[in-house]
Amino acid sequence: MKIIALAIVAIISFQSVIAFVNTEDIPMRRGEYATGRAYGDNAEMEWLARFNIVHAGSIEEPLSNDRILYLRNSGVKFLIFDDWLPAGYYYLDGNNSEFMNWVYYHRNDATLNPDGPFPHCDEGGYTWMHEYYFDFAFDEVVNRRCDYIKNGMERYGYDGIFFDWGNGLFLEEPEYKEINATWHERHGNMEYSSAASSFIASLRNSCGNIKIINNQGFREARYYLPELDYDMTESYITGCEYYGKKLYVDGYGLVEVPQTVYYPVSENEFNGSIEDTLYHINYLESLKEEYGGKNFKSFIYMNYAAPEFVYAGRKENGYDVYVPTIPKNAIYFGYAMAKLVGAIEYTEVPWNHTYERCDVYFYDIGEPVGNSYIKEGNAYVRYYTNGFVIAGEWNKKSTVTLHSENIPSYAHVYDAFEGKWIESGGESITITITPHADELTGRMAPCGRVFVYEKARINVSIRKPVEGRIYFMDREIMPFHDTVIIGKITVEADSNGRKVEFYVDGALKNVDDEMPYAWQWDEFIMGRHIIMARAYDENGRMDEDSIEVFILNF
Image (cartoon, rainbow, N blue to C red):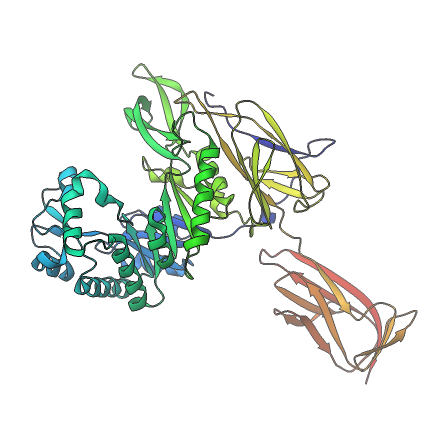
């Protein structure tokens, strides 16, 4: 094997203990956010169906009605389509929306480049269309575009929109100088992003309960963050680039392959530091606190990665053959780093999107504990109610011992990366990290890991009647050497299950699926009998408790 796999092993102070526990004991949840394509296959739809927010399709090419219905029925809460914030495409063959036809015929007032230039289309060689940049200070542009988006959402069944190019800094680039000049000629010292963010505010007002996600609005935070639900970063934790490396890939032949970049925000993207990444992440959190409006919930860290290319152990046409696999280390690292600040994260694998499907998004680590992450040795750790994440970079094997009241004592803990149950010590756990080697670059890569505490065991206990008491007409009278009931009684049970069944001598008497769990026992009966409460959780696991009583009820 040519790739050194990163391993995390948790050990208690006296020995390492692997606990064989049913996988049903792992807390799981729906994923938070995922991106997809309108033309994706059924497997992609099945993947997207496991998330709460799904960003797929555009305002001009939405998902089909049957796929929208499938995602809705699968539990997706919010469907998001995308559009370009500053501009719209006008197709020279005339196949345009009513809105873009209006823009074109009113381009002298409605756009900032009525006669060009068209930098984006020219750069991409898109000779069949032009991009027109909206003048957001022109009220009719704002009103008509709000109506266009609102009608599209209602027609296709979407809940919100993602705006690409979500700030005005593109105007500072040389190829947009003429467009920038037109803006300032018309509007003097008015900031472009002030008008663009006002458009977003108008969109929210016209559409009501819309979800609005922007791309890199944080670069002009004072304008955009007050108006958004989410803002997206790109390649802040990992990136993906081509550097001329060629491999003979199974099913592809000899091709240039991409590489994962672990330090995209460092001055040197190959020899940087995750501390550079943390600096920027912390800065974004400060912007969130300062400018985030009443609707703003979180940053979405959109990261990119290349597949891992694993040597297949054979040659073909004189070349070593490699097999592409899920870049597990990169995905876990991106996820753990974002979770250090409680943010949302998703990693795309542009080379082939099937290799981004990793279960890390579905482990239920719960809610963040404390105000921030902490540093433990060479590691950065953030505790959650159901587990913790850890991230760091190591050039050699390293050991970190975590001490925290948030770690359950002598409990089973699931190492999600390794797929193994381990055992904690007395509110402590010692983690040994083995470095991960990037096969293509030969460099050591940083790593992130996710640990999940075992799901709380199903339990039930009968709270009433209490052993060794006398009850008269549902009231406790006095202690006694036996449990005696005279008249009716309300049998009460405490449980963390989703329903409780009540039995007398093995015969089912009542089922209660709402807390507090209780059943009033009122029938003609006398003598010794056994009351039993049996509880079930959502996975069908069961626990029971019983008490023997002497009852007289006429």
